[in-house]
View 1 (tube, rainbow, N blue to C red):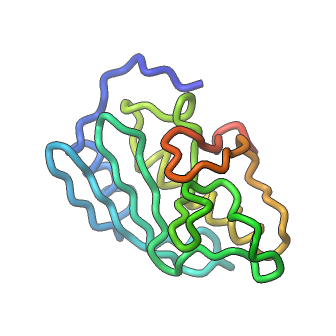
View 2 (cartoon, rainbow, N blue to C red):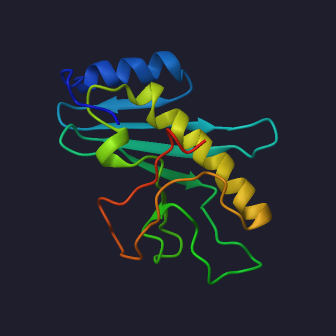
Length: 158
């Protein structure tokens, strides 16, 4: 469990950490919101994904795969993509890369947590797409749309 004992990192610190650790990413930070965009190739066998992370201090970070769009398996098009938010909205799914109540707090650097967790989630997504089995572990998701709280733990799942 991640405890929020330390002070929150301001968005300028978060932006600098991403620029340093993920030099291909474009980061825009205002006093209230950070948006980081870049390309991610999670393994040597993976395709390249254009991804985005949005973060405001009062909220958990949100991850997005911009291109290629996440897609359901052709073998079972009625099956939702595992560990996503908005799973009922085909074409609008967002990766769920961590369990907000325990894995994330604002004293952690996005560059060292959320971005690597997104890369790991993409590997799990590719394996699921090929096999139909989710190997990433995590917490079961509800079927609600726009759920702001359900997530999958990346940290103890492996």
